[in-house]
Image (tube, rainbow, N blue to C red; front, top):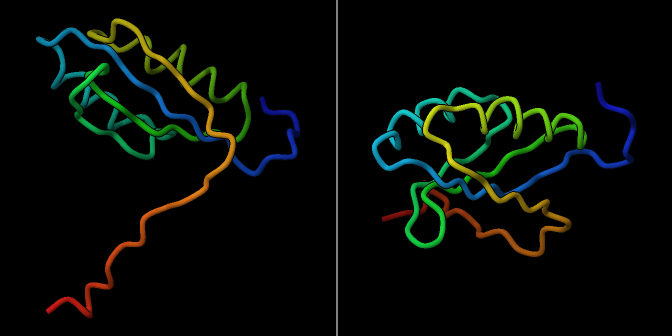
Amino acid sequence: MCRGTGLSRIVASVGIFVEQSKKEDVLAALYDIENIEEIYDVTGEFDIFSIVSASCLEELRETLQRKIMKIIGVKSAITNIILQLHKIAKKPDASKVV
């Protein structure tokens, strides 16, 4: 399915608009999609925000079109491909927490 892109992984942020009465069902369905790494219930423009990864653009497109957009209750989504990571928060070392 995927042709060589020279990239190790494609990562995208996906803002999802849902029917409010179906939100819990949508969250449950998203949880079962393997390519979704993170799911957030958020305020603001989107109802749900997620981080999706794929080995190539074809796999990302398949995940978006054939999985996320097919979930009953999903109205639309806005996808942004992440070009470069500049900073990630360091998680505190649990062994050093007093």
